[in-house]
Length: 109
Image (cartoon, rainbow, N blue to C red; front, side, top):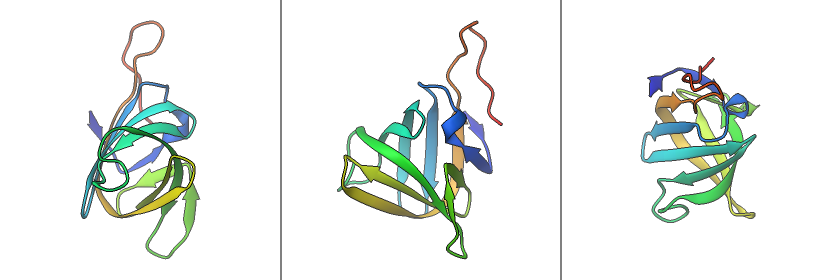
């Protein structure tokens, strides 16, 4: 996994993994394509990997960034169809892009 500052997860291929450490939790995310994911890390909302939709992030000034996640921001996702979650501030962000069709490792931009 590669440590990064900012991520546009909508461009990651299915099967990519995102590891998010917030001030109070540690989330593991598997990308399924677009903003569809499987997420775990919250003891009440997603203790085991659950289907979810990543929505975006909110920065320190309250600006919403759709499709992006970065250090210092608060991640926003919806578990199932109706439970919105906004995390505490992201402390670290790591990603491992799924392999491409030719077998070479994916790249993260």
